Length: 377
Image (spheres, rainbow, N blue to C red):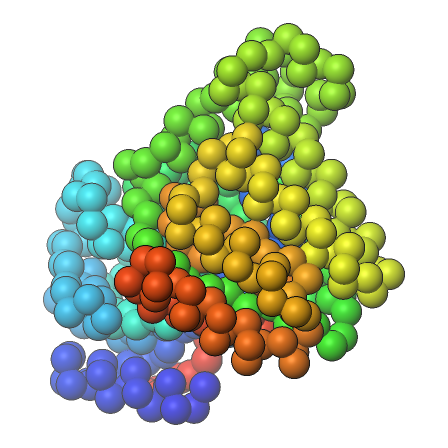
């Protein structure tokens, strides 16, 4: 962390000619199981990652909010008095502007430099990490309860950016626990830590296929779930018994079947964690991928290949796509001694089939967002 702090301090000084007053960190996440259940009031089991977005900030005294995305080599700037009336421009800066609007209070004149180790578009929630890091920079220590911080960042993504997602990403970025997964009930926002068995390793594999969920079939899936709820006359899909599926056909049937079965898999996975049963944990993950590919139809050829290849490696217990889908990452559960062969086999096979090199990220559960440095006064 010290090295990252020094790097950001240098980058900020080079661009803005001063030291940052503070540096804020917000982690990405990998969802171990419970996919496309958040916006239907279901269960999810994410972990915050040591991959994170960092925001270095200092007042500028010029009456503007100025943000530089170092990794993209791009900047955005808005006069403070214009922020409330701005509209999305379909670029990275929408996440920043959405947070500024969602705060609903006086925004300070700041220079902010953001840099992230979370892969963009890789299904590890780079957008929520950016939102939370920027929100903390804009708040600059002013009182904001953690649940409200997560909610306002979620509003930025749904109301301003226009993605009808659940709040899992923002909540785990704020509430992540080092060494633990977080069971979130998206019906009532209740959370509890879930200890993961010792001697196991989770590895995310980035397919290199970038998704743009706001303009993809994501919104279509949300609408199909709502249609299933309307047809069945229930408050949420999580509540429906199996026999209720007889009133559904086509896409609403498939989407409901995935959501109901996925909530069950979350609970089964947690039970397997408590029992230290890695084989059962992996079985639930693999079944989750099959349901996401078959019933929810949010996978793709690359993700299917990576998941199928992973479970053929000795010592790999389970694999599934993670995130919104249509690209991004898989998450894989294995014994640590299987990692070298796992990486070698998947790299070779992926190059041969897709002429692309996958990227591997160890998933170490990390703490949630916070201030990591105060460099000046």
